[in-house]
Length: 460
Image (tube, rainbow, N blue to C red):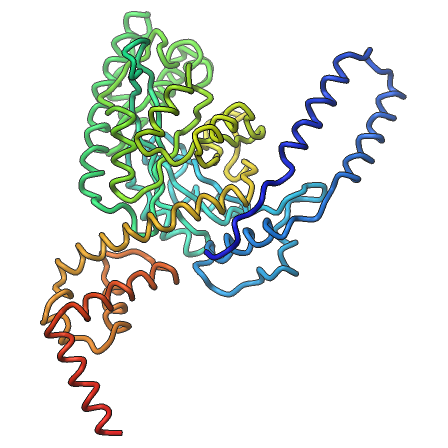
């Protein structure tokens, strides 16, 4: 992406106006009906006056994001057509509907990966990341379904971890770190899966401990019931225990189960075998991912957590929610030079207050900066994955070179391998560069190509 880095927008000015207006309203007596109507008209006029056309930086970012979402395919994303991707009338900035935080039945969500993608499509989402807890088992299904709807899938996972204060004071605190990977997935995938598998195994022990605590509280449950709710092959989590509590009649709904018993540190809460937050961030970086701290507003003391995870390599924190941007966390992101992201954290629970897929108004500039940081990291991961693939397939040797005539032939041969995922223009260019390096560094291949070039020149 070659777009000029976008300049700062007027969001901060808008927020300041809102604070001033709220302060002024707090110091006045309650208005009567006529006054309220008059104030409503005044606000409407001010709102209309404050509207502005999207900046050139925002439109440039929008074009880049849309082209990336379509894998470089041509589309109606010229400047004249960008208006079709703007927010509804009255909004000030262009937007691409992006969902970076959602869960399926492969962890603790209620919809299958395919159903999630279909719902994302109905909601107008163009980019979707499936972030199941401690597993990437649903990513392949999501990617296959997304082909029907032209949605760009970001392979992702939400990794459970625990934070221990570096100064030794204070209690441990559970944290969740989102990992976002390129279309080929993580490099060193076996290393990542080993850690995820260990966390999932710990969930079984954790669930049994929670059931033991509930039994002591006079609410006995069978582990088999919890496992059946979780589904075959799915490690049970708190939400599965909560659903069992609802079915047994101990609580009215999931929200009550969490608020009374299963919240962090609650009377039925239990920890699993989660690794340290810093080691999880380092693992994500080592496997070619972007590390993002999930829902930091839920932390008791987010400052030291963010500081220490940043030192370990953290790239971003969630700042945007369905109810807007959290200014305090936005300031922390600025302080520690972190990207600002956000997602709905959709689970499909029976809760009218749960944000829907695509409901978070993530500014296109924020997502543009995310891609700007991610693409070099993802390209390096592609190189590593490719190097491992060529070793297994024999492309990086005399035999493999004799079977191909050019860099493009090699590229097409590798891209047709079932081990490798879908590739867009920028990723294919990385491959071509790698293939060229292989050809030029391999003496037998170089000699063969030179000989063929000489023969071709003689024939012409």
